[in-house]
Image (tube, rainbow, N blue to C red; front, side, top):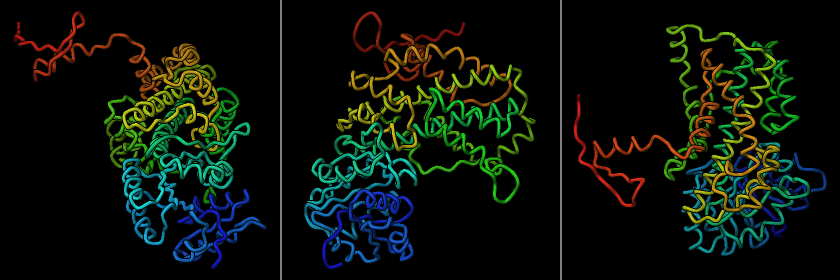
Length: 474
């Protein structure tokens, strides 16, 4: 360990950290990983491909001394205080010019603070989103770095080598200033929340409303994954229905409690969109539905009060499944539109200079929200870089207008039968609101001025106005 042999170091050898490092080693880079858990350090070496240069250590000094200078070090530890703890532990050991990368799901505001803090000490710091889960980390994730451009140029060859590839193009790119990488990853996860909510709603309608069993559901999602809904989330949904439970003779999906977990990134997306005054109702409702799912006991009591909500949908089964496909496609497009619009708005507000064409390009492979739609979006954003909302594009307008009748039919049938479809409904309501020149907000502004003197603008002349409203109770 006395000779600095290693190209890249990883702090944190959980599954993601370990797999990312093994991926890097498979691409010809010498790597060293640090974890205080000796078993994890040993597992790193044990799982390494024969002939690769991989070392696991438990001592911080050994780890630092093993790396070539300037050192390239990545952290994959839980967001929040653990990241700051690692920074403070290693800061005395680092030299000016060393590169420290946070590859976890840190909130972008924390990343900005860390960039400024370490910049003063001569350390390059990057916030970098990584998407693709355990398998992606091992065989090719989508990687979203931002911040220090000097650091990016140093690590670029390594990150391009280990990232997923689409038609030979690496799914990694420099995404902008400051915390652009973590900002893009945050919104990525918000989109992920929303698409999962939409898929779950279609599952409920087919399973509970149409009576489809798991084999039939597998067949539907298999077919859907062969067309314009082809995506990673549809693909894994297809597979989930066939997974047997190793404790019973049932399918595993039927044995899983209906209480959703969350790590906060979806909530951050909603919170930050509200601070930007940017509407993302589909992502908002997905976060709210996860929150509602946790109140299992209350929901069970409510069902006892209001009766069994499940009833068969009075529809032609095959025709309704076809409508569901089109409704889901319509809603997924709106989901991407809201997320990408938020990135554009946030980038401008925070001065991050995020290139949307590169965002959708690197999302095409490796990441959780990859889909064939992103190929279309990449073409659109490559031609029109300043488009504020992809709903304004010719391709998207044709796709939405071709499927809007189907989503309306699905929502009407679902509501009449008592099935909650908040995601599908939020998608349609967003579309119907966005495409209208006039909204009823003139009355809202009159109300605000009436009770709070909040003023209003007029349609016939510029300026700010206030009226002394007269009470009329006739």
